[in-house]
Length: 120
Image (cartoon, rainbow, N blue to C red; front, side, top):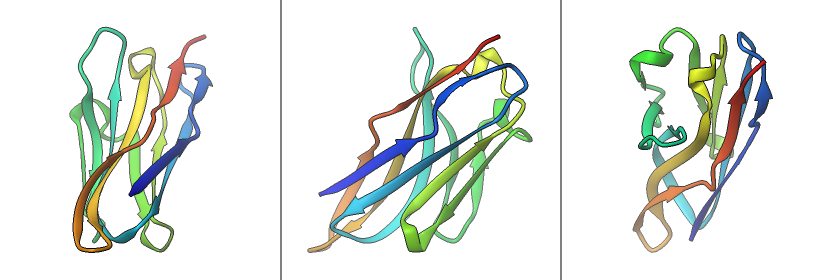
């Protein structure tokens, strides 16, 4: 069983920055792609950023140039540095990890979500 625990959400003023972290634990053999998603009130969950084990990244257009995803494979942790935040970034942010657990079982795990509120 694989668990993801997010941290770093909170209230920030427009133009401010936050850094989200997500640590994976459990019966992990290897983690492949890790990513961040968000769901704003009344909207569907959307992909924000993803990163491969080798460090290749992708971003949704609305966050390009403002958000940076990174990971520490030794710590099974993914980060999301968010700069120049705007009220439109207000959402619950979820991390996701896909990989292989012990006994060669594939997993697709989600964190519990962390709320980011951008408001003055």
